[in-house]
Amino acid sequence: MDASFITNIFQYYTAVVPMLIMIVGALISPAVYMATKKTSVSSAVSCVILLISMILNLIMLTADNGLGSYNMLGQPGDAFYGLFVYNKFTGLMILLFQIVALITVFVSGSSREVTKLHFGAYNALLLIATTGMMFVACATDLIGIFVGVEAVSISSYALVTLKRKDPRAAEAGVKYVIIGGLSTALTIYGISMIYGSLGTLELGALGSALATKGYSWAFVIGIITMVAGYGFKIAAAPFHMWAPDVYEGAATPVSTFLATGSKKMGLVVFFKIFLVMFVAAQATVSIEPMQYLFAIIAAISMTIGNVVAIAQNNIKRMLAYSSIAQAGYILIAMAVMSQYAVTGGLFHMFTHVFMKGGAFLVVGALICAGVGEKITDYNGLARRAPFLAFAMMVFLFSLAGVPPLAGFTSKFVLFSGAIFGTEGAVSGWVWLAFVAILNSAISLYYYVRVIKAMYIERPNKGCDEKIKVPKTFLVAIVVCVVLVVVLGVYPDLILNPCADAAAALFA
Image (tube, rainbow, N blue to C red; front, side):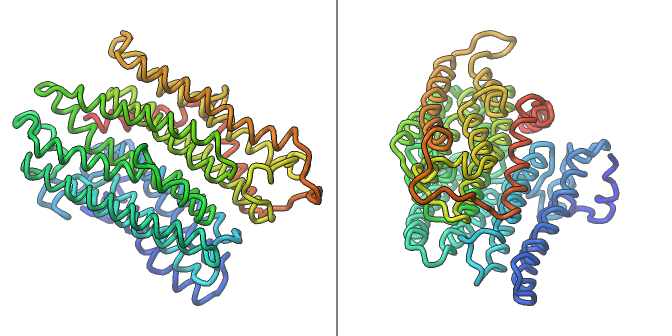
């Protein structure tokens, strides 16, 4: 596909064209709702904006004229001083964020949890948060990443509290702001220490500066505080305490957005900063201490997420702890630091969007029908809503890694990246793969609890009527079910682009 027409039109601004479209959408969204007073029109306009941005990004990503493989802002010193770059990794991550936002916007207008009083502002905040994620994907220095992350964070604080007349939302918003402020303080302090010790903020220069200057106390302190700061964003243990309360208190579409979008943005930050830096410096300095740091965080996240999820009776809190465990799985790529492991991590990020997002969509659809959030409220669901029960079963089995669903395939690639090193030799991270496999087996227990309630338990007294849910939720759930199955049996659809993205990241 020839994408030269995009470059001819936008010149040096080509790399940020998908984001510029989103910014325009965020600016007009409140006006559209004020003029029409219809959530359907506002959602439709936001979806059209997202689709235009997505189509442009896909054209750039699949370009056969080299457009997707070099800095389209020209040499440093041109537009934006080379602060943004577009390559295969950037384009694929932008696509992931756009998919998450499209699913969220599509169902939000039908959700009874989302406020209709400020619906235009709600859509604007979603588009701004998505734009921040996209800027994180294409930023070339620590400050650009920091600004993008803060744009997402500030928008997310507001989105969580927009669930009116629910004290849980207010409580979740306060906790989110306090912990988010702490993570921001740790992050900016870490950036200052990194700059002081290495003398640069550019991602491409961090590795060579570390190779030249080596470790120092200032650098170690900076790395630890940055890992902690960005660890909050992905809800990795022990920085996970905000996630269950926020996912429970927020409107379910917002919980979907945070679990599948905001978390992936944090993982993109880990890949772009820490992975690239240490891989580039490994010829001169030892990177094993950092590898073991990430391996320990991954193992703790898996274990805490899965073990604590067993005791949860609220479905949204259970899914929140499951998300913590899923973050631990993806962090395996940070411990192994190989191109194949990163390919598996990116692949699992995509499959996680559809299986975890699909599970939250089922929860949101049932809340619209008046079904509660407790697992016991799902008793006999297969009789009342056969398709929703089937879809939830597919999503939960995929999250547990049951073949032939997408979760099994992505976990297989990710875990095998920890087992096999270069040239097929067995690596030293077999123990981490064993911990991940054991935790996947543990997760099957609490996922089966929900399936047992839906298919074996009898409906609660007075809950025998059929369930009707909004059509937008049904469409989104069908899409997620299809993709979970298709990506399980035909993984190359996403796996090959993930391999190209990992190659671009390492390059």
